[in-house]
Amino acid sequence: MKGYLVLENGRVFPGKLLNDCRMAGGEVVFSTAMISYQDIITDPSYYGQIVVMTYPLVGNVGFNERSFASRSAMVKGLVLREATDFPSHYEMETDLITFLNKSEIPVLTEVDTRALTRELRSNGTMGGVITDNLNSLERLIQKAKKEARDLTGDMVRFVTRKNIMSFGSGEKRIVMIDLGTKKGVIDSFTERGCQVIAVPATTTAAEIIELRPDGVFLSDGPGDPQALQYAIDACRALVGRVPVFGIGLGHQILALSMGAATSRLRYGHRGTNHPVKDLHNGRVYITTQNHGFTIEEKSLTDHGWEVTLRSLNDDSIEGIRHREYPAFSVQFDPEGFSGYSETGFYYDEFVNML
Image (cartoon, rainbow, N blue to C red; front, side, top):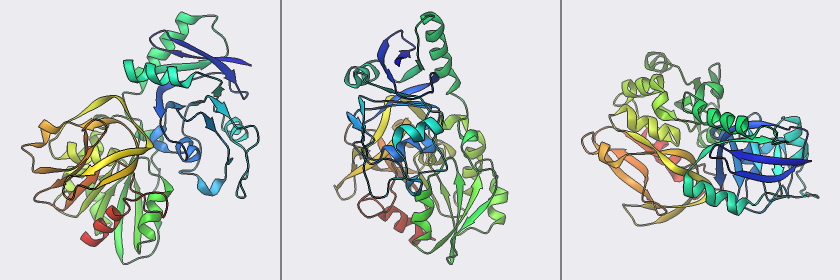
């Protein structure tokens, strides 16, 4: 079946719809990951987004529920050059198209993803619509613009947990403010002998202190950090009382809580291959990232922050540490699994602070 991606600037990219889901709207972003498509599709940080995969062939190892980043699919749509017809892996439970059909997520293939990525790099991230017809192009363009506007508010409310949950049984207790976390983050702490108490994003500082944490962790998540005043207020009240560690969106919330500012990147950082330099030892780490906002460096000057890490792609801030309080954060996902990340030691560093 013919399909199309319509961008808010009027550009139309034709392709082929591979499943029964014929229409979806969201923020169109691109990921440079060559692997981990299952992790991307089920990552809450991608909520509300149509993801363009720059790697040309996707789906070769199928899907298995054990490898989900969260409970279900989170993307609004997937745009590919080609989907594998015959996936194969000894742990495969289903194939890409079957899973996305079941999740009611449209898949648009046979798209010139190189041209589409260049469009997003040149003009910035924008709203878009996947559709099976162009009978009313102007209406589709207006819908794409509306999708972009709708994603400027609080997206965390759609992905945060509703109830307090406890994981592990270690001596050190970490309260995790769930802004849209992945399962691997919780596993990274429990494997280090910690008990993790995951709480909804709207939990207040007073309620968190009642849980008697040894430290507080701010998870990654989707959307604009400035829309999360409740999380900013809670974090501000916690810094200086307990050690605080943030990643991704949590990194931005920590900075905002201490007087810094954030701004939108032109097309964001999304992929598993982003080089980041440690300013203390000169080492370069290859990181997994998914964010559209960054901390403004000038805003850090008067608030006690030290920049610890930088992106080698655009020199943006990738890590900060407070000079007075036990608080630090990184912009990427440092999940500490063998073969997955070389930055899992940041979890060790936080655990040792507790």
